[in-house]
Amino acid sequence: MELVTFSLLNGAVYGLLLFMLSSGLTLIFSLMGVLNFAHASLFMLGAYFSWQLSRWVGFAPALVLAPLLCGLIGAAIERYGLRAVHARGHVAEILFTFGLSYVIAELVIMGWGRNPIENRVPAMIDFAAFHLFGTSYPFYKVLMTAISVGMFAFLYGAFKRTRLGLVIQAALTHPQMVGALGHDVPRLFVLVFAIGSALAGLAGVIGGFALLTEPNMAANLGPIVFVVVVVGGLGSIPGAFYASMLIGIVQTFAVALDYSMLDLLGAFGVTLTRADRLYEVAAIKIAQAAPIIPYVLLVVMLVVRPRGLLGTRDT
Image 1 (cartoon, helix red, strand yellow):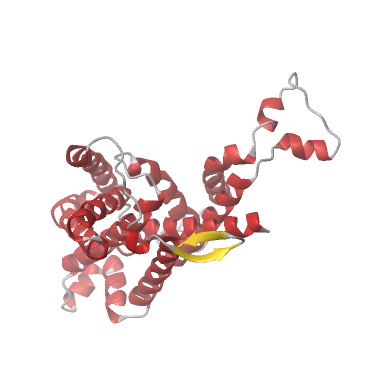
Image 2 (cartoon, rainbow, N blue to C red; image 1 turned 180 degrees about the vertical axis):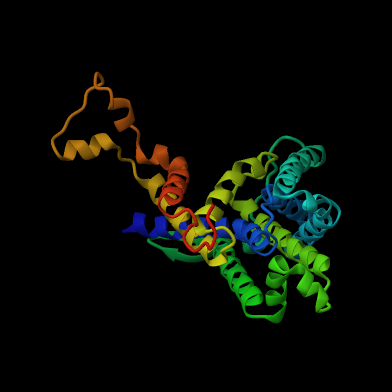
């Protein structure tokens, strides 16, 4: 019971962290049609900015300032980069953001070095939120959960239930009509990209404690973020939330399972020896295969339902 409870809690926290990271990417794609390969780099910048600002002004101001800095960087990327290549199509946008991710990684190395930084949980949130089965559960994970849920509520409410959200969505498919009604469409796109980048930065502030903050952080997280977006459905914020929770919980439970196909076959009286061709594959523990589980889900989803859980367009 203890294993199940903590695996469920940790899986939910990991899933919410994935949602925090993927929500901004989903927002940008759903409203602008841009698949931003530099999104994980903004997450990394959020982690580094928060660490640096915490040393200068404390964690509480850093929690606000780091996402704002990432939002400003995102606005500059859209205004002075993506807008120039937008007319050349999606391939040009992908190449631009892909190259930008490498530029940001090199700038991080120049600024903070190649080695990981000690991005520890600040003292003001480093205490036990509650005790369960004799084990304390850290408050910062509860804070991460609260911020993730608040982020989901903000995105869904702001862009599905407000006039501004409707205008932004209309600007994606009918920019000339929206412009004719007096709205500044380029400024709306800058706003959307800035909000998505700020959300990535906010995720970096909180997620930096749970993950290793180092220059390869974005490269390690980038693939899993795109898995979440595709499984949930391109452009679907609720879909990204459900996909994040599914992947987080399944992968966390898989890490805790020290069983293999040999154990399952043994339960039915079937024994494999090292001379059998399938022995090496059957001997792989579920915990060892846990890192590839999200990609297995991705393949299954592409075969069974290419548009994802709640997507409206095929991948």
